[in-house]
Image (cartoon, rainbow, N blue to C red; front, side, top):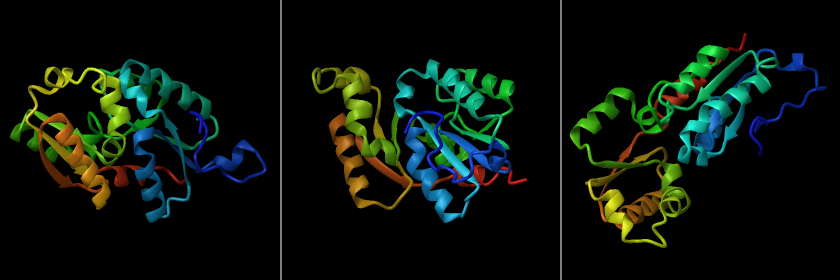
Length: 215
């Protein structure tokens, strides 16, 4: 799937007017499974999804331009556009894009916050500052999203440099999946950190997707 291409294509005659009343969600690829599950469970059949690569988190300065490009590609044919990104390290630049285009994003600085709930995440941060967070996506893709980008396979001695000030891995679980829990535990072992888990479900993501206009 390429950026800007809906994950759920609409079978119409091809007239742009056929998308009036439909909602496009522009999401980080790390949220694709969750949004698909929410869409199905809540019968949000008016929602289409397009995802940008999760690897953009390694270069967050590129996220605003990619989101802007995808919004502009689709703004003429969708009645509403939702952006399933937190600020995600863009330093407020993503919010500027939304101000320019009229699209709306979910509340929170990142997915850890909107999965947990904003106040609950603040409480967890205050409880233990040295926390490395995992979601289902990161537990599933720990090798490609954490180990390889940091070069820990080739330079394992860098582990203590990167993670020496962390005290725990906290796995924020969206699903009840023993295989993912096991993967998260292995990730904590790999980093030499204590493991904790908290089941959050989809948090604020479900009510956010339900705000999409169907008028």
